[in-house]
Length: 503
Image 1 (cartoon, rainbow, N blue to C red):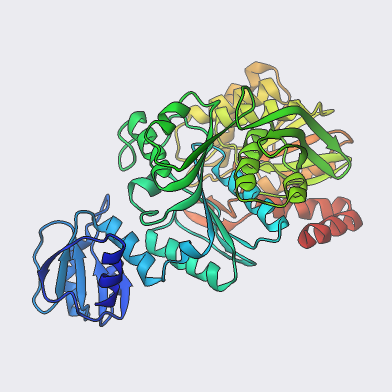
Image 2: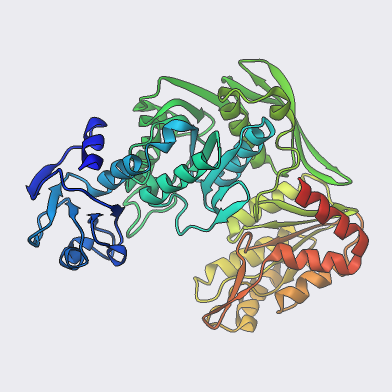
């Protein structure tokens, strides 16, 4: 079969269990429900399901061939290839099936515990400002031009990645930037891809537990795997584990960035800017090609780190100098420090949904010296109650006003969740009010906002639903904020929305 022959030329290895490797196939699939006559089916073992057990059904559906990676009952009349790792095999075969689309674009992979999503959007903004149409794959889904597709995982299954790459090539994309998760690396979802540029933002304990990583050491090891499959590696040497990331790298070149020490890309003169129509950052980037000023339309110290990572990647990608300076000026990342309004007072949306991220967010916003710092938040139902107490305490201590409301209550009563938050916020002496309806809470703070206020609506970020009693209802914080602004400032809100759509 031509598919196998082409894969062999790229290093694909297998043992023929039965049948003929010259068998023709009409499709490549890995979901047994989509098996079709003439397809090549790749069996894979997951955390809760092993599709090797479905091989009989797949054969009955007319599959011409199958790939397995451990012994199992093999039905007659079907070609069977055995490999060491069927997930890697799927990645390698998918690349062949879609005619190696990654080789037809500039490929940039970004890994790290925090900052992947924002950095990926920053890279895309700069490259597109340079005139380079750029696809995007990550937490918020797959974006190709104006087309957006939601995905289940930050790094989708390898077949879906290669399919998206092929669509990007067809749409005349010259580059793709994607978030590369540790799970994606561990499960070979990026197998067979040689990234032109790989970026490491940072690492801290996360995704450790059943069906994820057994330990932090394992998590770190899988993060570092990106740098065995990229040509140029860009590493944040401010992170304590940077040396571990670089230790086993197989890159042709390793470059570094830092906001604190000598590196290939450095930052000077960081300024927090809050002015009519703009809230964000300005700083000087000191790099190998030269020194230049850049402006970032996202607030927060951590976004300075993300921006420096993006500038490093785009400098290596030979982005236009004007784009390096201005490509991030008007950018927006859904639900991540997303500025919705910045005229007179500021309203933003953020995904902060635990005490650590909430404290970091409020600390950052204090740096902009608001007249009042107002936070609108709740906590999810049917989850550990510690989060309610810790977030309540942070709100009471750090905000000038906390507006306690609903989040995803699930199967709990909103009033019970709010009562738990109240028990932690009240002892702090911080000012707070309770408005159980999240929509009404948002409308109320915008109706009463004063010049100089900074309002953070947190906890849900890019989520476009509110889960109540097991049912998901459409609810997007940004949309509700825009409705409330339209009620208070109908003409100005309409003008800003039109401008944002144009950008």
